[in-house]
Length: 382
Image 1 (cartoon, rainbow, N blue to C red):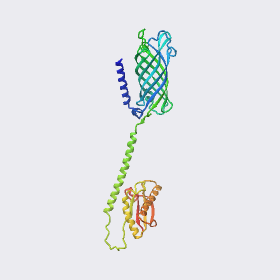
Image 2 (cartoon, helix red, strand yellow):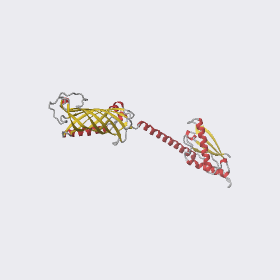
Image 3 (cartoon, rainbow, N blue to C red):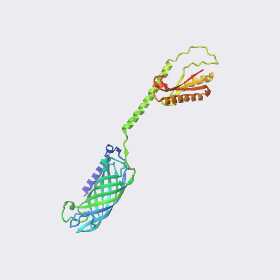
Image 4 (tube, rainbow, N blue to C red):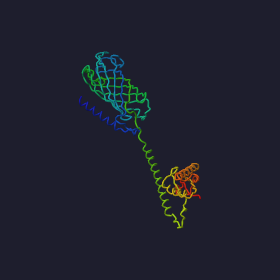
């Protein structure tokens, strides 16, 4: 018997390992759970029909006969390792019956405890569905029985089907039909007629009605959509590359302006008047934006503002958008807001609002690359 117990223990451990390693992602696109998730407890009331090894002393075989049947109680605790595979430890018993003559029996007290792997057929064949109301499972297992009246032990195996009807996420009604197969002396009596298959051992057929309560975290997480994550990452990389290209274009423009800046011819300048010769000063924006892209563009604007204040000049601020992107109305609105944004900066620099005129050109295609058209210009008008 010790050897059998060792074998059963090893089988239970190996089965648990297989369940933990099972990859439900391939079947149902869910991730295996943590140790503390998807535990459950079960309680139930059973109606057992006893068929001990000596039960054919001319006895009626019907499981509904009172000399053969008896009410029992059952409890179990278990865990689902994946939507398809679980394990539970189940104990049941109280009153047993052994046949002592034709249609005659005697009661004895007993309990049995079995480790039972469970296979959820609904999830195996139909896929995991958290909203499914009815789940059908098969179970089988092995364990130990004790006849307390006869003070003896026996080994046994069990199998059956489990129907679960979910009332809510955590509670289900159980309807279970099962079979227990024990060593022949489980009921305390030896088989006096010799082995004959089913009759050579003690057997129990039972029906159970009970409840399952799920404890801890319930359900399964979906596997991440790798393709969607890759697509999102690529779009972010593309956006960064586009910004980098705009920045490189701006650097090239500034270098070109610096290299081609005309050298002013020396001329006498009166102390009270400064001549400010310049082309319109540009302030650039990112696509679809009205916030100034580079604050360094305001350096030239500030120099122009100081000159205008000192010489009481008027300033013209003109807003643009690039014609290649956006609809006409959107580009017109963008150009107006960009002109307003730069005009507000001039006011902050000390230029009177009455000295600033604003206009908007909408979408244009006058500079290359197209990102240079996303700008506002400032120039002296008189």
